[in-house]
Image 1 (cartoon, rainbow, N blue to C red):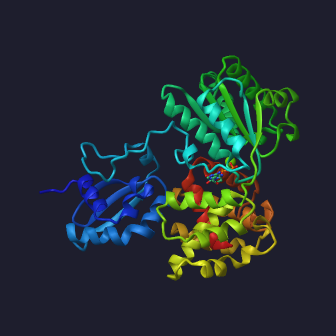
Image 2 (spheres, rainbow, N blue to C red):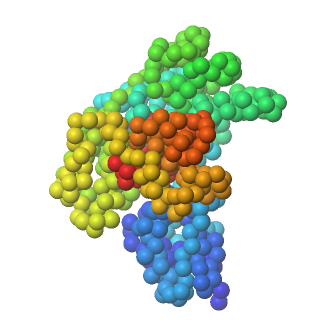
Image 3 (cartoon, helix red, strand yellow):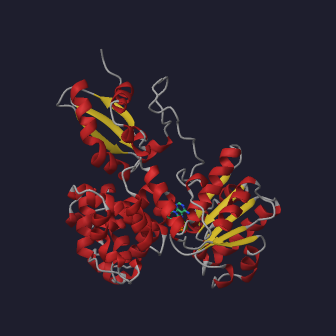
Length: 447
Ligand code: ADP
Ligand code: MG
């Protein structure tokens, strides 16, 4: 009898251990086909691909060997559209996927929810306000303006508000957009003469979530359009939530009338969480990933030494886990101390720039399985675009090279290519957790 790929996949999952079965990334995989030689599955991101390769390939192969034969190879392809496909094969009675994840509004990252946001004194007010807005949008806290430094949870909260509203009221139209995307779509609507469509999209939203509004500084045309969008939404009591890396009054080159509108509702500052909250976030992160073997001692140590931002905090955890897996060493306090020793230095992490362009190109090529020479070539094949862009971004983040220096390192004439690569990558990081985790892994290898 011919085996169906979906039933085979469920059988495989049933034969894996608990951690694997509960792995949210593994659950994203969609079985495509099965032949005596290959089981093909599709996953939505490179990160998921790599995670399955690293953690689950061996176990999956061994089940495949008993079910189909030792020659049957697992082939994983990355297909971004997979995330739009229902997660559970039809008519399946298996318990493996018994809780299909709720469908998120397009553009919303469903990992960023209130349940996964750890609250402490540094972010309590901000969290409470965000929660209030998600439950009662368009009321007294309209607009809500959240500001604070990099990696402190602004984007997380923004998505959480949207996710909560769309879970409570699926018929409501929630729009999440970065300010840069808003600008790009606006410019495109002018070029293509589709302003009506652009306006229809933004002005009919029940809730507009707009990230990193500081980007609109000096973009007068877009500011004007945003001003009009803002007024329309506001007058119809539709909720607007904005984030920024600085407060409204310190935004420069932004029209006064816009700034004053930002202060009409509620302005809320988010700060670096104190030690206990950092520890809570690490515990939460371990829980999300099914890591129950990490001692509190190790987590406390990480929480103690990383004091700058949460993205760094998560990055440290990923780094430790990666190193202990690679070196096959137990992850205890001694090991953590050894690996993170240099981190405990007084220099803030973000200021320690020791990587080189060449080193970054090598690590990134290896990670994506591409030839380093291709990374700095003129070739524009799809498989090279993302790795190249990420390598450029990492050069900016981890070295002291200027945009022009980086352009040279990639054989580019023009430094605007690098600026574009950096903003595009930042956008991807904000949009999906996989990209961010992928960057964390790469950074961990480079520091
Ligand atoms: P920002 O937009 O302020 O730069 P992000 O929202 O992207 O920061 O947060 C960076 C990372 O830290 C994300 O993975 C986010 O989930 C995590 N994070 C930040 N604050 C918290 C928190 N209080 N609880 C759990 N995770 C958090
Ligand atoms: Mg952000």
